[in-house]
Image (cartoon, rainbow, N blue to C red):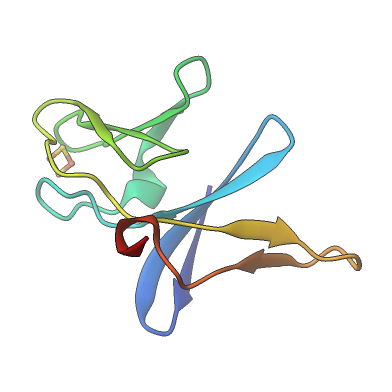
Length: 94
Ligand code: FES
């Protein structure tokens, strides 16, 4: 997991099973950076290191309490020359 910043927006980039996922890098519970979270590859969730709230890396949905609000996710693609590109249009705006 790699923390990045896009136009001032903190994002964590996750590589899993040959795919990339970009997720808001602030837990929706108490704002802890999710780039410091654990990752459960079986359930494909980020596990917040502070209180254990979990977020689906595909949808951003909060799936384990105490987190109840989703985190934003962003579209990701890999360019022909190997650059990972993250879109600024978030899942919550769709
Ligand atoms: S800050 Fe992430 S679960 Fe509380």
